[in-house]
Length: 151
Image 1 (cartoon, rainbow, N blue to C red):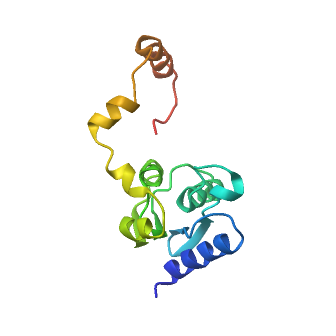
Image 2: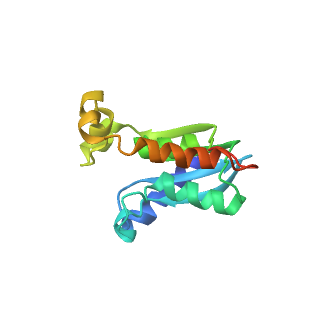
């Protein structure tokens, strides 16, 4: 067994045995060293965004002092959901290794599949544009600020 996946599994076990959330653990590795571990803390924190990958990304960013995790790899017990995948991409994580897939996740009662099945037609009913002109003004204000990074 891969040592980093073993660490992710152990992190997930820590979470489930403490009643923090589902069986999802993640570790972030840079240059062969684990820089952060995280497990699902949705129940513990009463926060739907506290997935294992999200917790590991938050900890790695804090430890490394940057939101840019270029050069890091992520090992996780399950295929990242769309939210986590988005965070992984925003963090510039180079590679992701996962254990269980979305079918496996569905088999234990999680609903990741619904997010992958969101069609453009369903999005039109759910996501609506509002006050674009005022928001474009805000974007122009942001564009005028010097010395910023766009992530």
